[in-house]
Length: 82
Image (cartoon, rainbow, N blue to C red; front, top):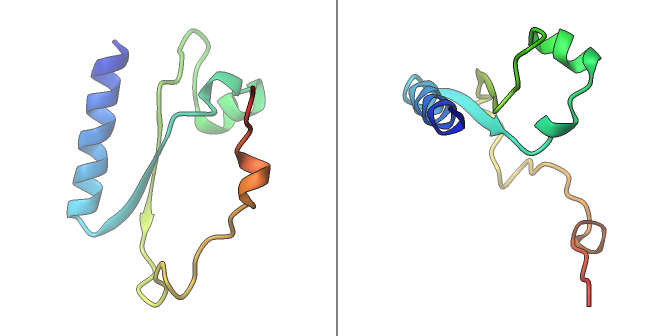
């Protein structure tokens, strides 16, 4: 079932891109969704989210080089365990 949902999400992502829309797939935080987020996303009781697909219009005057998103320093993201 998860594999089918992943394939469907990938095809919706590709369809959005082909229409000139921006899209992003989120999967990492789904195990921590609380009741408020479930309500906001319209996820009914008894359903388990597998992926969230965000689709929107791309701003033509902003690109990755001139307007990068803020990034955390590497030491805040990467943890080494010995």
